[in-house]
Image 1 (cartoon, rainbow, N blue to C red):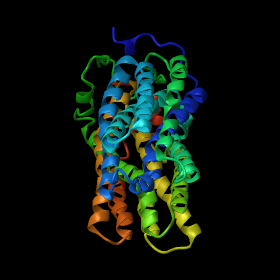
Image 2: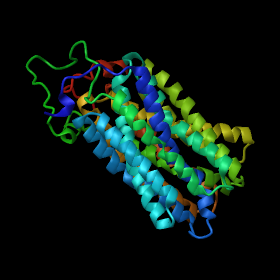
Image 3: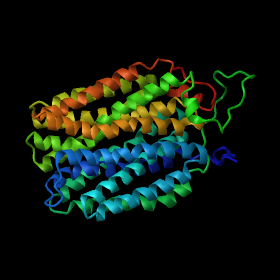
Length: 429
């Protein structure tokens, strides 16, 4: 029997689910942003001869592992339940960060970042799907959004740790904190249900009595690309690509871009911290708006905020203005991607949610792979330090356009939650 189709046990409570998701994604955020925090230290390493291109490559290698993790974990989560894949992914992530901490040469360090990327990629769709299924329907976007702010909170911690310990400490030490996920495996095993669960619908939205029940063994990717879903699926994939170019480009390059603009390492890490604080506050504010039926508008606005903020950062401004722009950029990067993930979760029933998130993030991870190297190429080809900031504007505007192309009927808000159990009712493309 398909484990994910067995009789469900007690439904997880929203509070513990949100808290667990927040902690897990907080650890992921640290593991993601720590590379950016140590970027200037890597460039100054006396033996490894790290260049700007090398730093971009390290960011891309981290991102290269993410599609493998996202697609495999999203599929496994729908097929076998969220618990086992989540526990395995936490163990994988802990081991990868430990290997980064003891890596003695650049080649081994690069390999560990690829492995870390696989762990990060696996956990995001699993955690998002788990919290989505536990969330109160009336507060779905806010509760899922709260959990996903963990990525930004982890980035804040990475910035604070980097500002406090670097350059006095060896940068390897900062990767040892990434072993903490191993302690969460027993908690996951206790709190996360072994089976996929969703809020029941009071009545099917579109299925008639003559329609067959869904086949849990059906090809999930084929279902995502069926005529009724194809356009929505492709738009989500492309919007995720644009969002992740911004997220992973900024996570790798923002401190270095600020150093290029004349700030010292401590000041540049302050901008990184502001970036992540803005992501937390912006995500929560946008999620509240989304729960009132404006998910699409909130997502488009967040993308455009990223473009405006990056243009502002490229110009000479008073320090408070630049810190505020960094915060808005965080909302437009991490905050926007959180909204896109919420949108994907809204638009799909439980039996497809993990796969939809996994493929959206998996295909979109091409943007995460491209992002750091794209910024590195711009920095190498264009001497002006402002060029790196302008490079973020293109994917931000593209993402706003792609979300804008989703038709109003695409599931969102309360309607999506009430229709989630109707697994054969395709969302309006």
